Length: 292
Image (cartoon, rainbow, N blue to C red):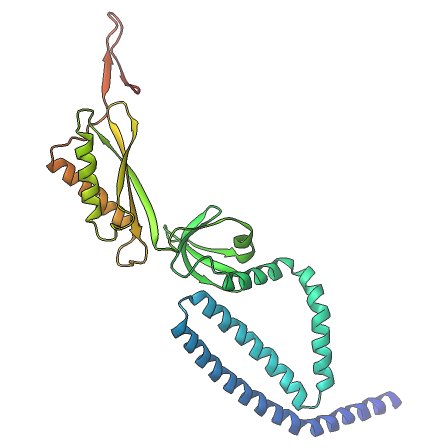
């Protein structure tokens, strides 16, 4: 009976403490709601302001996520202070410093990706919409969070690369400065006037919308002597800031127009030469000729 009586008295004590604490809890909830509402309003105003001033959406997203986390932590600590548990709030802050070291070791990869996300947010090697290559992944930047970066490949795959890997490995950004070089090989007949053909190719290429024609004019050069063709390497630069046509579509248009212009000029694009050999009583053998 003594145990039951002690338990009853203890519960009554907790109940009395709860009744005393209840007004503070209600005030704390009201204060936290007001604080969170004002903070949310100011956060939206701040994000809208930097959204108009800054071009880098990745940095804006980073600040937005960071402010949300800060508001959540401050709201919880403010609630503890209002209800009279300032000592507990101080203990939590102190414990957070120590536990952050322990958590850092326990969740090394998560912490590493978070810090890498912070670095990438301020030292921006890419922007949303840039075409990049990281290791064997090549595609367009869609979004970057504090943990990973979202890339969509040309064949529609969504790849999420941890930020730590981006920091550690070489990153190729094809479009950050607005210039992206493309090229293709076209084979011409050995009897072709090469100088004329090169001029036709360059003049045709420069007329395609999206091809840069000022400081980075299209160029051609003799790549190699093939078995039946002189192979010409056609090079041109694409304006990546122009979003109405894709880079592959621009190259397709260039190749189509070059083929048409060469045909109108009477310049042939021969096929492979087939060599036929007959060794008296042996069967006829056919084979493709090698380089001259």
